Image (cartoon, rainbow, N blue to C red; front, top):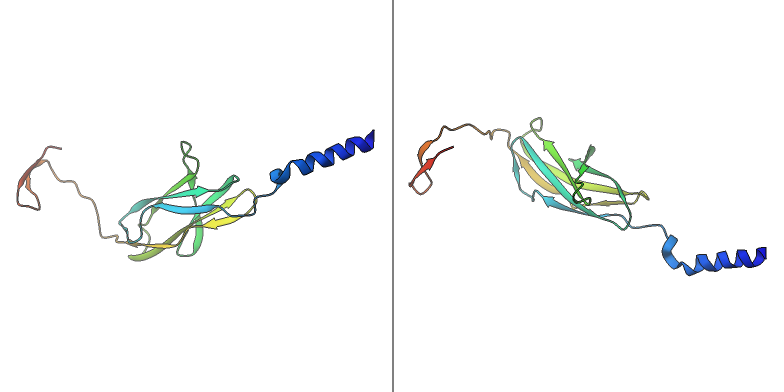
Amino acid sequence: MNNLFSISIILFLFGCGGGFDQDVEGPSVSLLYPEAGYVVSDSVEIRFEVNDISQVFKMNLIVNGVDTYPMNTEFATPNIFYIMLDVTDFEPGGIRIQGVAEDEFRNEGSSPEIEVFVDNSLRFINIASGVYLDSDNLESDISY
């Protein structure tokens, strides 16, 4: 009877096919925002979409080759990761950004690296409401 039970378990495991195979491919990572060449003044929201057949455990943002920015996930869409990157301490010029994801089996996947530009001289200012000339020399009433 024990032999029959052992044989039936072995047949069951073979019948499951690849159901117990470990995921051996890394996640697919694509940048949603910003696009290459984007100009950043103080901070920028960076978004990646990550797809994998298993669970993605972590997602990091790599800036200029340094892996120090863990990213958050949106609960409404669990395969979207985001981070608000503060660039006020960066020197003006180009920075390279890339996303790297790791799944539950430690497989890694990464997005292509892109360059965005930091221009810390750009600042927002408050302008009082009133009538102003727009770029076509037409008067525009700004009520807010």
